[in-house]
Length: 149
Image (cartoon, rainbow, N blue to C red; front, side, top):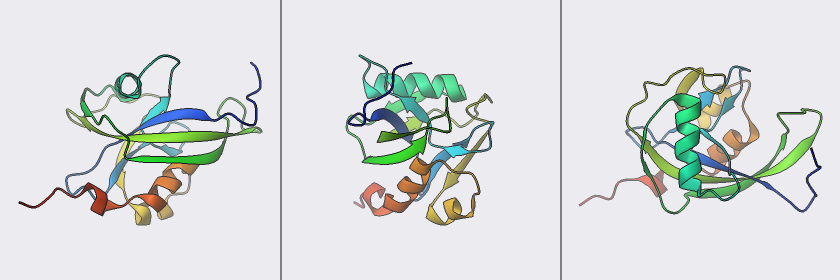
């Protein structure tokens, strides 16, 4: 595999699935024990919405019912490469608010457990990918509050 030049970022589209109170977001535990955001790398030529729908189906066996047209969050993180943990890469994370039909997931190596979390919950976890920590730092529940009539 070719090395990624220093000026390039891996683009990862992630689902921002909120709990009923819209104050916590969904994270998934992988079979390696690390907590991650649902989603994955943006495939060449695909839209973020297409990739999110596919990733959620593949990783969790869930049906997506809605994905926002525009992202809610965009941030970059430095993380280990999963294929070679001795190497690091910069990843651009683009999060789209997403709704799923239900949370009756099918376990896979990329999803053995689900949890809604906020910054306090994330601080208590031992194994968390850097993008989850970053989202916990920037997540603003007020941005997701349902407007009062």
